[in-house]
Length: 405
Ligand code: PMP
Image 1: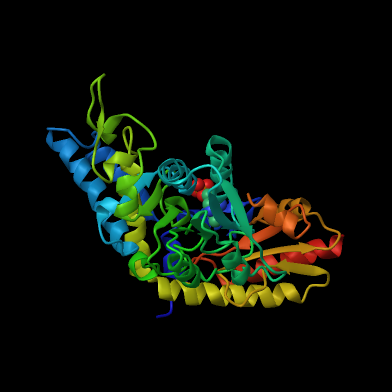
Image 2 (image 1 turned 135 degrees about the vertical axis):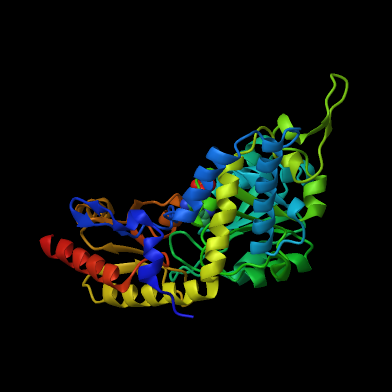
């Protein structure tokens, strides 16, 4: 089904605004996406109509808020096809989900010298939590290399597996290169060695249909703000068998069973991992965001975004001295590039003056920058509300900047 982009854009009022008197061209969707009206209205409605602290409330308003929050959990469960909603944990972002797993998984399953495998293209959120575990309990991080195209060397990853490997944690899609990693294959290899796999879906869940049962991944994490939802909500999907064994990450609030000074017991899933008052208002908004995406359809979204990606890549490659980082066939709609002699920061600043929002810098992937021996890139990342006309504005902007240097 082809998308009616003009109609879709009306759902996102910010897309009709201006920057420096130029129509906004928002190509920073990898950092965060814009929000459709239905999400903002759901949040407004939740504050105005049903606001009361969730769980344990005897009064009607609290029960209504709880019901809406739990409905959202069901929507998210369905979106990734998780077997049970108790396997869907609310956190405040991908980063917190990752830290939760690193802390609780390592506490339960890792001893000094045990190993976690990641790849050279990970976001810091999939590096630093494991490094903290290196300091706390002597866990070792092993890094699977990539080639110059930005493709994971899966044979090399397999060679890193030892009897000490406890978990493989990989990005589904690189936030810098756009590379779609062969996670089905990685999971198959890992499981043949009885090793669980964590998928960082922060850059994939908004572009590709994900079915955690079909994938058979053991953990999957993502952030709602990158999926057209509110800020401050992360998702952790985990298989019950692990989540039940793993100790709580934080204490207090709904995560308790019974508290006494002699002995405290913990609640069941998912509440065991949801200490304190949850951000139930934005959780309610999150469910709306996924319903909105589902209505448009991820297959239509992917094929339209691929069109934008192909067109923009072809046009960029016509520019002299421009180099794209991440050139595998199987990519999501992210383009990182540099033009010889132009600092990425200057390119970003000048595009901004033209109303074009791109991201510049290391994109929280400094080891990947080291791999390519660069400090940073300019990154354009597309969403389904972007247009070919916007790509044209962007391309002529880049050309103008190149001609000025
Ligand atoms: N992993 C990847 C691949 C990402 O792109 C990001 C966000 N840039 C994160 C993790 C961290 O997400 P958040 O900041 O929402 O926690």
